Image (tube, rainbow, N blue to C red; front, top):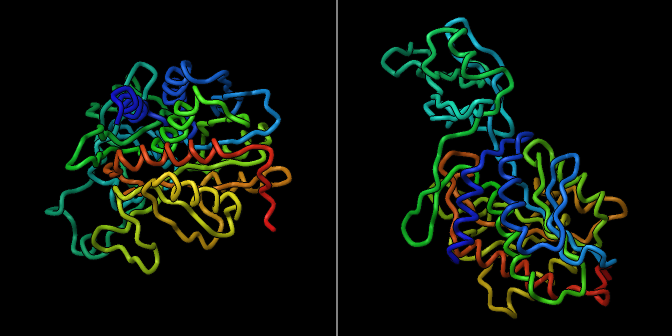
Length: 354
């Protein structure tokens, strides 16, 4: 991967962006894309739109959501412990024992999500664990409520503490690859196309609040009113123990991005993505999406009179945990696939299924 592109990915991971608190990550996007976009806009919802050919009547939208799962401070006990609520879908079984960062007004505050050690659990607690988020707490080392309130406040956002690390081959691990990989692919596609002539207007959007119901994609797509679009997200890899390939399909990290086909996908756009991958010899998978997907493609398809939408996904192991794993080559191939597909779109392409 290009050195500056890899640094962009690392900067995205380092910028906290739990749903509703995405500004740090959006600042990274704006700074990175200033060199490549003809125009950059931020709407009242917080979506960042990086545009090439903004006045072209044929608009194509790329969407990758910048929000990551996280938490929010709900209550501070007299003893100085923090109770919290989730922002997005966090698995209670992996929350206990995690290191977290509270993003307070005066700077980050480290904490841990603790519980009684196994030695002190009753027989009932061992055999019937009650893993309820509202019962968990964060220990920041404060002596009492007064000490805690000098460091943090009610409604401060929280993220897992999990730095970007490189593994064997070209695999990398961090919290937040869902879906900062999507932003990366969309913005890299725009970078690739920034010096090329396009027969359309390209709107690469870093959307907000996907984890809370695809909210940013809905508002930004309504505003842009694209004829066609591609959402970029992660999908579940099935190449590790315990995954059922008869349900998930055969999705392997490092063997290319995933092109979805199914009712959420415009047939012409789906065929165009596959044909582009085959003609450009881009490694890829095809995934059967039997119902509306839980991605920005869902609401994009239904915006206004309808959008010809496609979905490209990056294989991801251990989604919604502090140790998500993706492949750098999958990100590069995803950006190339999206860029080359957009380059083929012009006013002669009819996305009407016939």
